[in-house]
Image (cartoon, rainbow, N blue to C red):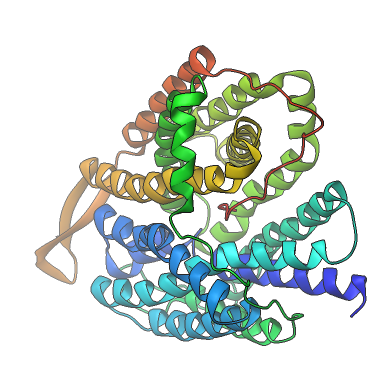
Length: 435
C-alpha cells in the first residue's frame, strides 16, 4: 500500500472519528432542553457518561488490542455498535433511556479515541520517516479530526434547516444522533479498509500510568500544575454543556447553533498552526498557559454580558485559542518534565486527571449551577408539573470566569518553565482531546 494511500486512509479515519463525536456534542443540551424540558442536572448526567467511560474503558480497549485482536478490527466492531446505539438514542423519549444507550455508545467509543491515535502512529512509523516527520504527519492527520467536527456541525445545520421546527416541549427524534449513526456506519466500513495493525507481542500494563506519580516528588511545581489543570478542565465543561442553550437565548436561531459553534474549531486549527508555535517560541510555556487560561474568562464575561450578538458569536474564537494554548501546551510540558521511560505514563496521568475526572465533575457542576439559577414554571401541557423556565445566564457564567481567572493567576505564580534537555523538543503523542 502506497504511503499516500496510507496517509489518506488515516486522515479519513480521524475525520470520521471526530465527526461521530462532533455530530451531537455541541447541540444536544439545547435539544434536550427544548424537547424533554431537561434540567441542568439531567443534561449533565447525559454528558457525564462519556467522561466516566473515558476513565474506565481505555484500559479495557487497550488490553484487547494488545492481546487479542488487530486494532482496526476492534475499531470496526466498536464503530458498528456505536452506530446502533446512536440510532437507539435518537428514538429515546426519556432521560433514563437516553442515559442507558449513551452508556453503550460511550463504552465502545471511549477506547477508540486512543486506539485511532495508536493506529496512526503505528503506520506512520512504518513509512521510514524520522520522528520529526512522523510528528508532523500526525499533526496533519489529527487536524482532519477537527475538520470532521466542523463538517458535522455544518451538515447538521443544513439538515435542520430542511425540516420544520419542532415546537418547544414537543418530542421528535434527535437529528444529531441520526447523523452520529450515519457517520458511525461510514467509520465501520472505513475501519475494515485500513491496513492491518496486529496485536502487540507483549500486552501493556493497564495501570502503567501510576509510574508517573514519581513526578510529584521529583518535579518542582508538578503537583500545583496538576491541581490547576484539574480545576481548569472542570470549567471547560461550561462551554460544552451550556453554550448551545445560551446561544439560543442570545438570539442565534436553533437550527444555526451547530454551524455557529464551529467557529471554535476553526480558531482551534488556526491557533495550533500559527499562534501556539509563535507563543511557545517567544513567550515560553508559562505565559502561553496563562494566556490560554485567560482566553476563557474573556469569553465567559462576554457571555455574562450577553450582548451584542455579534460579540457573543465572535467570542467563540476564544475557545479554540484556549484549547490550543492550555491543553496542548500541558501535553508538551508533561513530555518535557518526564523521563523517556515514563513519558507515555505521564501523558496518561494527565489525561485521567483532566479529560477524565475533571470533565466528569465539570459536567455535574455546570449542570447543577444551571439549575441553581433557573426558575421553575408550570408545564403548559401539564400545569401540575414544573419545568425549567427563565435562566440567569449572567450569574452562571460569572462563576467559571472567576475560577479561570484565579487559575491563570495560580499558573503565573506556581508554574516553573521546564528545561529543554538535549535535542528533544517534539510534541508528545496527544491523547484524545475535545475538539
